[in-house]
Image (tube, rainbow, N blue to C red; front, side):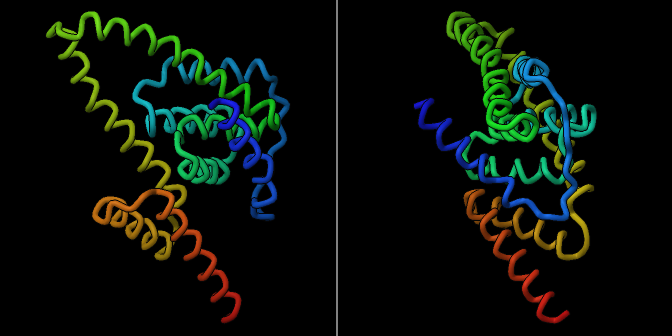
Length: 208
C-alpha cells in the first residue's frame, strides 16, 4: 500500500517542475533534511484538525515565516494535492520536494505522518477506553468551532492573495457553487478551472 502510494506520488512530483509557468519566481534554498523533518514533525504534532487546518499551518510556517516556497507555488501544490486525495499530507510532500527533491518530499511526508500516527494511536486508546465520560465528550465538541475558524481564516487570507480581477472572482464563485450546490468532486472542479484558464488564455492571445 505504502509502496504504491509513494511510487505514484513521487513520480508525479518529479515531473511537476516542467509544468510551472516560466514567469514564476524561482527559489533556491539550502535547507537541511533535518530541518525539513523537524518542521513537518512539529506541524504533524501540533496541527490539530486535519485538512485545511493543516494547510493553514503549513502556509503560515513555510510561506510567510520561513519563506521556503512562494504563495503561488503553494497554491499549485494545494491544487495537485486535491487531485491525489489526502491533500494535507500532499501539501507537506510537495513543499519538501520543492526544497530538496524526492528526498525532501519523503522526509517531509515521514516527519508529518510519524507524530500524527503515534498521537492518534494514543488518543484512540484513550477514546475507546474512556469515550463515555461526559467531560471528554464536551471537550471534543468544544474544538469544532476552532477548526471552522481556522479554515475560514486561511480561506480569506489565500483569497486576498490569489483572487484578482473579475475573472478570478467569477471562477471562485463558480467553484464554490459547484462544490456546495452541485456536490461536484474537487478533481472535477479543478479540471474545469484549468480548462477555463486555458481557453481564456487562448482567446486573449487570439484577440491580442
